[in-house]
Length: 359
Image (cartoon, rainbow, N blue to C red; front, side, top):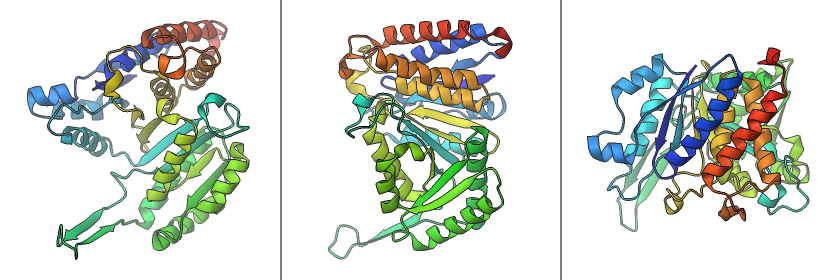
């Protein structure tokens, strides 16, 4: 199976290099091999060639590759950052990506300001519509830069699009052998859209014997979540509410350095990228924590139907925190590449314990 890899800008090349070490270990143990082909798109390519991405790549992405990994995009030294949206938009359009997935895991209790919360007690996957696909955004600004300036923004949902995305979400949850999902909204913010989401959610849950679903208002959810976070493994929260809620929980788990954002569709094509971005202040200094990238790789293996690598990567990240395989920014003493080496070695030893018949 082939994956397209765009290291991109900033720390992108460093973290992609460490990811490939882990891929290499799995390839030595499993009959199913994963090939990661590197593509140079990013700020440097844009300046040199005057374009963000090529049609040839997009054609190959659609026909040769299961999905794409993007290490990081963003180069503040370039006069325009439009190339970032061009790359994302082109890939979204080519692969028809409709669903956004954000797995948020507390990998160590030291990462959260919440008292009494232990590692793995927060293990929540957020689902929402891909903003590039489902929301038909329109708006206007009139009388700009005057005291009477007017602005408007419109989000358009349709019954069939909501039904399609909820169906994809339910299939993903059932595939992961889970049986509970929550729809979290703030009805006061989007009363009309919220009603439609709740209607379709209820219809599909009533027809699905494999899932139990509940609808919660945002304030109720927050109070319940912080009392018992283990209860909430799967959360659907569309629109701005979902974005704000997921960002809040990311902050509660220091998830910027351990989490990812993924986009997929009913055909299981995907785009996966770590959330930390290019991090220019530490780029090329061998001190970026690569766990968001490894977590991204775990989800890639999940999309590919390879459960053992997906679970083992998460286990390895927990093990790394427990043993202080961390960079200086996390009170550790290791460099990026040495963390990659240790992780690869740990995963290799764990794979040796698994019978070959299970691979």
